[in-house]
Picture 1 (cartoon, one colour):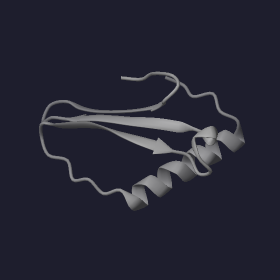
Picture 2 (picture 1 turned 30 degrees about the vertical axis):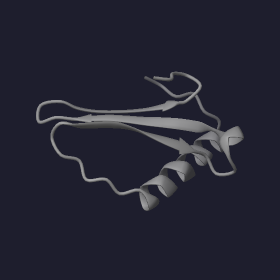
Picture 3 (picture 1 turned 180 degrees about the vertical axis):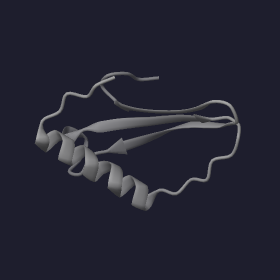
Picture 4 (picture 1 turned 90 degrees about the vertical axis):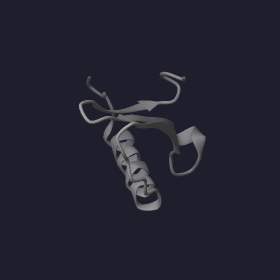
Length: 72
């Protein structure tokens, strides 16, 4: 999959991910799965994203998507 972003969009996305990783700490164990909603700096008008994860011994899946693209 390829993300087509402008430099500004990419920089905003990187800032959002960095802030989330600094403020959110989750230790995953086998069998864990879930969803984390992220809102870009400045509010939803600047972007809302969803990180879904499934962590198993033989299958580790992390999906990062724009909330407008897909909702579950």
